[in-house]
Length: 90
Image (cartoon, rainbow, N blue to C red):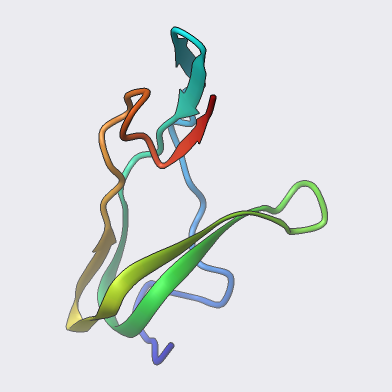
């Protein structure tokens, strides 16, 4: 990752962790995460738990390099539902 602006090593903190369930599937959602005035090239991201020895929770593959050049780099999370949420356990 080439970076500048509001991005720093380790990334950003996810907010609005809202665990819920539908039928037999538990899932959670996060607010979209943005880094302003950032120059970034990224192919993916890692969601990790900083309060538990930085243990990995989920690896994301963006499918191709995503970039911003002195602009806003945003990671948009999918709708929180039992068939689309970023983290689902059935």
